[in-house]
Image 1 (cartoon, rainbow, N blue to C red):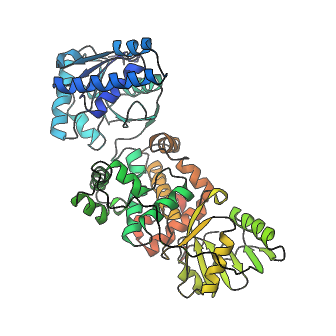
Image 2 (cartoon, one colour):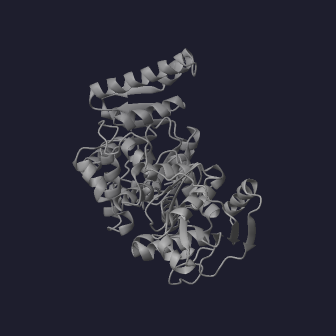
Image 3 (cartoon, helix red, strand yellow):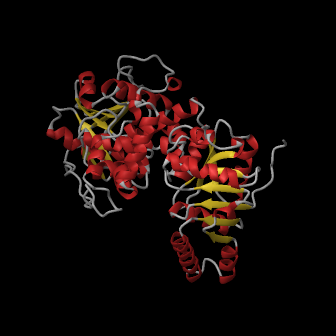
Length: 509
């Protein structure tokens, strides 16, 4: 039988909950004839009322006129009659994530619709291939994962099963483009792209808290300032709901055969057990206060000499600020050192290094100086907040001098626990490693990762753009050192990043 390559003109959405009504509303706004089915007339009425209120709000705000409202409503049919889906080109089920019920509704859809109709699931956690195995003529079955709220979110994940035909996938891609959304295509693997790719952001946030590296506000603030995230991981999980976020992490961990990269934190589990779910129930473990640990004020110390080993944009910025404030300071530029890589020696009394995963105490054994490690930042020139750590015997005078120098550029610098990778470098390197693993294992392409990062989870840039900014060798060194100092299996860099021999402790150039 010839494959059907025709455009999709009519869609039925099964389930009038938050996702179902949002998808139906999105389709109707973009000229697609849409039927929203729910066996409960009350749920259909609630969905209709929600859409009407939103349309009236758009009219009041001058975004649409009454004629456009009429056109959108003309594209929508609300029906409690299941057989009304029979003539649809595409049927999308959005019912609860309960596998037996999913199988039941998918079988009913397959028995009702025309043989060339596409059948899609909006599941975010169940095995797509297992669902596909129970669908008659499963070449027409596919995953279409919308994000909430569907009318506003820019991304839709398209997930073919083992059985899905190319024509089915292409028709869905054409539909997504026609309704003004971006799509990514990925294999039917746990978490698809977005939920798996973003896991380290949430998991590492809680691990940093569990390891007492920093306070919750410091973790969130550091990642917003240095990583350009719009929300930190801890405040974001409070916004999403701790129970929902923990359930997704647990499901991916289970589906990935309990790989330690995905192990959920015991702290988040305890929050769920205690009912501290965040915004959804108004009960949070994290205080709304923006206060963080007290940071020392910059002292009166003055740098008399700055020796820069190697090249880095931060070094250039600090040199410019130092010369502007202390015209007599001696500046020396030298090649990076084999064991230390790039660093700054100040007054022959202390060393400053951007983290490469080694702790300040470990580095102090090599420098034989008071040693300070600073966190990574995507752009130090616009970073208003930075975390750092110092070797345990660092003098009060050198701590003050360090703050004096760094605060010529960065308004607030706070000391936290001397921990491998500190905060931003640890999280970004973990996100990059996960994305590299996904691409190298054929889950999706690099382009799909970057589209998903920006359009799916609202990151300021694509993950492979971060890799280019931070440098592959630096990311590799950070991961390698974290693997040796924290958890070997969790942080070990993918072999495609291992382009240099693995030393006892890696040196970031």
